[in-house]
Image 1 (cartoon, helix red, strand yellow):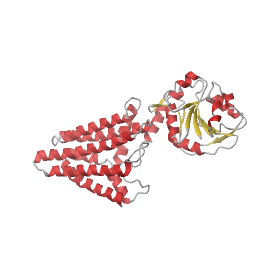
Image 2 (cartoon, rainbow, N blue to C red):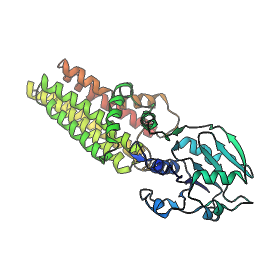
Image 3 (cartoon, rainbow, N blue to C red):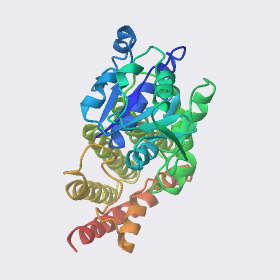
Image 4 (cartoon, rainbow, N blue to C red):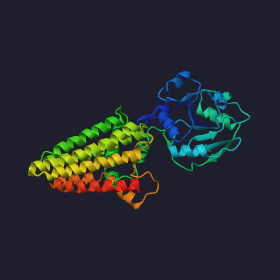
Length: 388
């Protein structure tokens, strides 16, 4: 078993409480440890008042040094106050070899040792000086072995001015390679800026999702009124819906608040907004010309949208665990055939920019024709991928 040991240090008591992207450093270390597969997070020290103040660390084991060896831990990973290893780094530390009677040390301020080693009793290190006292104590019994981190990153937050830089890096890491071109290079820049403003507030990812849905539905209402300014404003709101919709996932991932409910709300909310926009274009076209055919086109696009969404849900999302995104590709297979790559490309939301452009040129009817055929082609591709 492996534990991540948090040790408050004298004169550095506040470092574990400083905020990093909406979470205290202690909370973020705890979450990184959980995601890396470390068995327990242990908070250790002598000041009971100090330890009891970390109430946000639910599930954390509070224990003095003398109990570590008896807890059955084969290795302890200890971070200097203010040091934040990422998940990849902790996974590597969990697997790295620990030699007998050695303490493995990284120059960034992390060391790894076995609390059950022979020849010393950790209870003798039970002092208020915390991290530094523990490290000095272990040096008297164990041989220091310097190592270099072979995977992941280690962030130094011992200086407050570094917090903003680390936040930018953490937010930038949220951009996925699977995203559409415009999403990666335009929308994400805006949504990440918004998310950085929201991350330290009490607003939840699900609340952001609901707000984005309302923005999208408001855009659909404007699109349904008439050509010209209403449709232009409606298409801009449709784009704003897509941008704000990116914030819910960003906040959820950066604060480790992902949930199955949130993933499903986001997925079905997007499809409801898309269906509303398809319907709005057909309604405006019908009112303007008196023709019925636009409503058939809207109906076809809406049916294709929801049948595709249902097939994706049944194939990909129904039995998927809540940790991490519920939907990243139309196929569960790790190997992607050409048809899967094409379907993944078509499922991206870059088509929203076409809606904005055509609204400016007052030709959203062209988009509806393409959407009616495109949703059915996409549905046929999903059926082929699912049942081939």
